[in-house]
Image 1 (tube, one colour):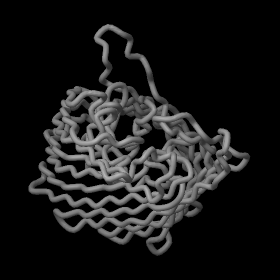
Image 2 (cartoon, rainbow, N blue to C red):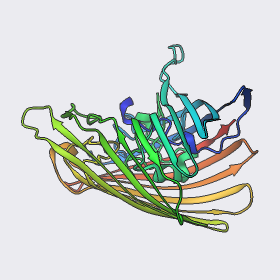
Image 3 (spheres, rainbow, N blue to C red):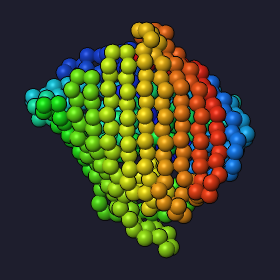
Length: 383
């Protein structure tokens, strides 16, 4: 089940970083910072048996029990992030490495030494030319959804099969497919009249069905992702796409091409903020690329937040991920939906305390429904 959480370090780059250490070494500025967080989460599961990647099921949502408690990470892991920047030959140059780790395990004596290097890249460019990136980092498709999710600094859906040994899921699988981390060569253009373009070639990946054997392998072509963005004051909007060819590796499984598109917008108006995002296509999976094979699906996220004061923000977010095809890869799963209510209190400039309650529902094509009620309380520190 550990593979289910590709969420690992999904939002580390967008965290409100306040670097604790800054070192000047010749032409280089080296910054070291990070994230530490922990949440007490409790869930209870009920209803029908729903197969596949049903997040509200007893097997996945409650980790095989009718109810379960974990003290572990939220949607973000713990992390140590180092970057180095300089300007040489008229170019702005950056190197970045992020190393991440989980809090909760099922043992009090076993070594908890597994680390996850999600990011290791360098970039170069200018304000007029744009920026080129080479290395490993998050993808373009899905980035606005997960980085804009209010539960990024909380837990969202506190799925127990993933939180032990990794992290909670936020709205991954119940609102959007995971942004993913890839080896890549990508480009971000400068802004022109509010518009900008991000595009790249990404290392092709195999399918990750999680609850079944892998059915596909990669072809000779890279994955392609691109996004057109617009920003004007409080309004941001984006339109993106991704594609990759998967080759059938199991008997009777044919080749297919993953093709997805995404559209979304966010608006910040005083104390109020709104975000809406839609993803649709073939092979997007519930959690990650092609995890259900050649299946059409769609994901939607709607979120609103309100700052009652400089320190307290309240929010509500609803997401749903729905399969259009009742194919073998779904194992009968029709949809996952999650509703989360959250309160986020800035105790200091570095520490945010978080309380969330929510419900996740999973439905089958046969008409069955599973329900997971859950809540979380804890905090996150950025340094």
